[in-house]
Amino acid sequence: MSKNHFLRSIAENDIKNGKHEYVYTRFPPEPNGYLHLGHAKSICLNFGLAKDLGGKCNLRFDDTNPEKENIEYVESIRDSVAWLGFEWDKLCYASDYYDQLHAFAVQLIEKGLAYVDDLNAEQMREYRGTLTEAGKDSPSRSRSVSENLALFEKMRAGEFDEGEYTLRAKIDMASPNITLRDPIIYRIRYAHHYRAGDKWCIYPMYDFTHCISDALEGITHSFCTLEFQDNRALYDWVLENIDIDENLNGETNKLMPRQIEFGRSNLEYTVASKRKLIQLVKDGHVSGWDDPRLTTLVGLKRRGYTPASIRNFCEEIGVTKKDSVIEMTVLENAIRQDLEASAKRVFGVLKPLKLVITNYPEGESETFTVKNHPKDESMGTREIPFGREIFIDQDDFMMDPPAKFFRLGPGREVRLRYGYAITCNEVIQDSDGNVIELRCTYDPLTAKGKTPDGRKIKGIIHWVSAKHALSAEVRVYDRLYSEPNPGASEDFVSLINPDSLHVYPDAKLEPSVAQGDQNDRYQFERVGYFCFDEKDNTEQQLVMNRTVSLRDTWAKAKG
Ligand code: ATP
Ligand code: MG
Picture (tube, rainbow, N blue to C red):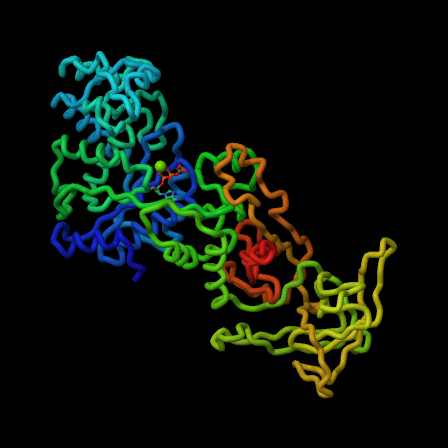
């Protein structure tokens, strides 16, 4: 059961008071792009509420803009909703209602409540008035019903050019709510629709389509974001003025649906508008819709986010009456919490530095038995091999370390996690001065964390046996933007963080990773949480993505 919020209270009260028998919601994306984290909020709200209250929820494609929509988007949206863990009651398409919508438009004309207008876009703007000035009636407003019917039929039959005529609802050109100043409900578009084909050259507008679709499906609560506040009056006007059976499609829910608005949530350091995402993808600024740096749901999935972590994130940010901006740490903490509990611990070295233990017998090796999770016994144990040659991370060695650097340096002693203490005796450098190998000795008496003489060994580093190591390409992501609100600028492309992807082409991993299932998640100890890349990881080439760092390094850098 999820947290309480105002929409939930409204829905619960409507059931308690007998207004509806059950709650029926819908998630209505337009198939003009891939879903992102903002959509997840709406999905969790609509599907989650219906689930919690024993109601139903439809997935409906709001597909009335033929130029922008396609089947690829439909499929990805369907997959993403299912991936998030939700089941729809019905899968619906606004385009399936085109015949009915057309009939309702004819009905409005017959009632004298809609007319065909020949004002062009610019004239229409002039006639519309402003917030402080009433609009003016279009000369077409007084057209007779029969003339309107004939013109609308000609619009449908393809006898006019785009923009030559529109069908408008006849409401009130002086309304203080500009949405009600005779809004367009149908326009001419000579465009192929991915579903309806070429059957139509007139397409209904969102405001006309959405309320009728809700009513046809028996939706009780039509949740939408705040920008539709002014459209609510039009939503109600359409439903009040068409003759639509309140008892449709076998649904026993009486009464027309009610639109209720809630606030959008946007995540800092990301862009979410589909138009902008399309530009990033089409112009190659990212590798695709599923680039792990994007907060599209497919991107987050590829990055290693679990459905539960996203549902928990949505739960955490809640549902409010105001728009909100969410800090990146809220999202990152949601996945950290999930992976902290569920990810198997392993060793992975991103920037390998070879280390030879000169007093360890050549050709010999041993294994250490290690817990897969420090707190969860049920996750079992594994064996990690150890031998004379190992890899440590380049960052765990410094030629001239400061006092507080509790890792390896010339002459220093450090503990290999789960293994022995080693002392660095010799540093081998190439002609450019790069450190290419370390020669160390180990103390056999220090196995498994022991220090028999009680001497202090402060640092503990991770390592991988060279002979047994798996090579992998590891991709470490940073924020795609270093600006908190890149979407505010039209120049959002130039704000891309040039350091948002680091590839480690020859990382070394402990061998147990090879036994993993594609969906397994790992904590590379001291490094972060990782998953297999769902596209590029193959039998031949291990490719892993860092989902998130162990701690919030940005907060540290800032503060
Ligand atoms: P865009 O403006 O980028 O095209 P949209 O919000 O119009 O996106 P839709 O496909 O219409 O995209 O969205 C489907 C549903 O998801 C709508 O009900 C919308 O209100 C909701 N939604 C989209 N973005 C957010 C967000 N950031 N926070 C909450 N809900 C959102
Ligand atoms: Mg929209």
